[in-house]
Structures are given as structure tokens and as C-alpha cells.
Length: 346
Image 1: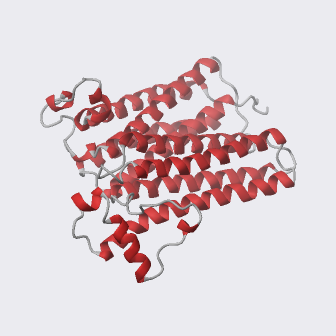
Image 2: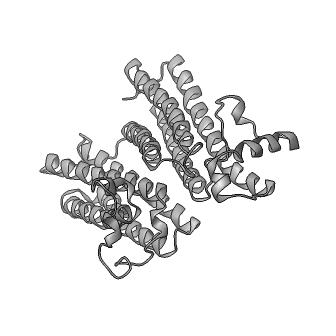
Image 3: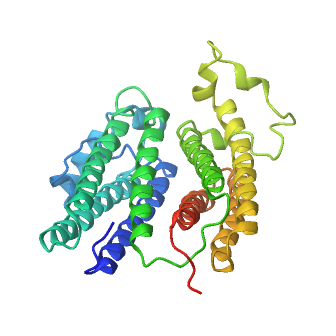
């Protein structure tokens, strides 16, 4: 992927971008959990980076917020100081997104001018930069869904926004892992089957994470705060109250929580089965990453249960989101190690 002149600089840059996207996802979680996402009712990619600087600006922003359903139906009587608190998280979320764009675009231009990356690789990076721009538009598209009728954003658009962010993160992480100095490993026997198993586990993990966005969008984690049963039953009758029945899959909070609470353990089992196979077949240098994945898979289920039992306490919920992205990162790391076509030095 990278030219031999200086692969380290490019790889380091990619890991920094991944780290910033990781932080962005956590800030997004806080923004969602504090109901801050609708506090900025307009989108200006350039001027919007500057927050209100005086009383007149703050009053103008607060007046705009007072016109939307979230204020009128949920936050009637909110003080200006309380508004400033929720405004901060949405503003900071958007500002961090702009910073990610700059941290990605400026070094990319430098590397292209210095010819430290090939033209083909540069084209891939440019396409990822464009995807980042699309992600910004998706973010505003999501916010718009809560400005006229709803008191929160559309769960569908929230899931799209999170899913797109995870896709960009995964692309950058995969390219960064491919660019680092290769750790010498032995490609195990039956590696095609093992790699396929890993990608299947990764797909289940991605689905579970996306379903978490529906849980957040529907506030589904704030009901049935017991484990393992939901108010004394495995599947409550409320999970099938919408018609047609198919609507319950995406729009019924009870069904969404039920599906997510069991997707997590099932995904854990798929990951652990892959970990078990990897542990038996990979050489000792690769076992540390495999063990980390297995431990994180178990911890993540525990974090999910803790989030539910805590009635979605913000700190616990944010750690749960961080755990999910960490789990995705470890899955991709181990997949990349299996994909390396290198042989251990004798």
C-alpha cells in the first residue's frame, strides 16, 4: 500500500485519524445521551465553527431552539444557562468533525505533493475524504429530522450516521494496519475458513452496533431495566403491538431492546468461537491479540448489561460505546494478521 520511502509517517497519520474518529463517536454518544443534538438548528460548515460570542448571539440561538418541538414539548421553561450546556456538546461534536477533516486533508495533500504515497493509494484516501464530507451531510440530515415534528432525531438516520462513521473508521484502520511494519506470522492451515469465520463475526458485530443506534434513537434502553427477563417475561407482549407486524422490528422500543439484548450475547459467542479456532492455529506471537479479543467480547456483554441495569447512566453508556468500537478494532486487527502473507523468520 505504502511506498518504502517513509511508510511510518503515513501509518502514524492514519492511526491519529482513527483515534480522532474514536473520540468523535464518544462525543456523539454524549451528545445523544444529553439530548443536545437539536440545540443547533442550522448548519453552516464554515461560520458554524464559531460559537455564540456575546449575549445577543446566545439569545438568537436560544430563540431558534425555542421554535422546535423538543423545547416546546419537553424543555419548556429551560433557562439560557441550561441551553448553553446542551449547546456545547453539539457545537463541540461538529467542531471535532471539522478538525478530523483538517487533520486528514492537510497531511494527505502533503504526502501527495511529496509523493510519499502512490497515486492509487492517494485516490483511495481522496475517496475517504469525500466520504467524510458525505458523513457531515448525513449528520445534518439526521438533525433535520428532529426540527419540525419529532422531539428527537429519526432512529433510521441516527443508525445511518453511526454506521457511516464506523465504515470510515474501519477503512482507515484497515489501511493503517496494512501500512505498519508487518509482524512476522505464519499463515495457519485452513486460513480461508478461519478468515471467513472472522468476517462473519465482524458482520454480526457491525449489525449489533447498528442496532444499538436504534436502541438509542428509540430510548429503548430506558425501559425493562432488568436482566435477563423483561418484566418477568422473556419477550414482553408489548413487543408486537404495531401493525403491520414488520414495523415492530425497527419502530417498537420493546422489540428493539429485546433484539439488541440478545444480539450482544450471540455476537459474543460467534466471536469466542472464532477466538477458540484462532488460538489453536495461530503461532504464539499472535495469541496476545486473539486473547484480547476474547476478553473484550466478554467484557462488552457485561458493559451492555450494566448500561441497561443503570437505566442508561451516561458514563456507563459511553464506556459501552467505547467498548464496542474497541471490540471492532480488535476484530479487524486479528483479521488483518490472518490476512498477512508473511512467513516467520527461522
